[in-house]
Image (spheres, rainbow, N blue to C red):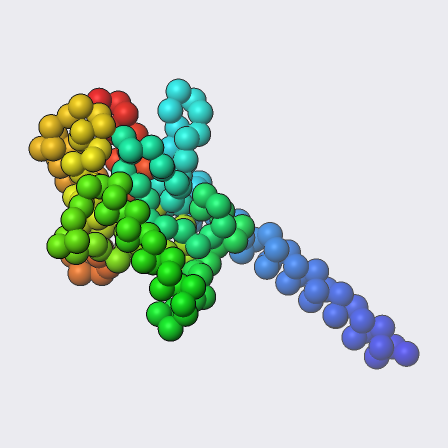
Length: 192
């Protein structure tokens, strides 16, 4: 009986110690490191205008008005729903996927006034793996540039400058692809 009580006492101590360590101290340490090294990202990358949160620079959102740059399609529910983050799980052998992409290409060409000879970037018509990407490719942004300039009454060169300012280069010059954060670009254009 004495051995059992000793084992029970040891088990309870170990359980409480690990609970304190793994449920308290470790999360606090990771949170602190995040606050010091990546404070914006650790707090959701929230973008505020007039003390109101208008979005996050880490999660995409839908823009449909012609005066705005449009985000890439999302397979994560309606309007970049973070609770259903995922790709479509459909591929090029799926008729449903082929039909959806074909329709997106037609709509993209129509909305942006592009003819059949213009190559459409993949990110303009394909959802990302997460369905939440906030960036589009610079090529995608440039194909939307004339429409946005026309709708806002701006010169194309002015809009191109905004695209260049908001183009994020690959990490260390080689990790990833350049991208344009759609929310930040649209908010900057709204300020003009």
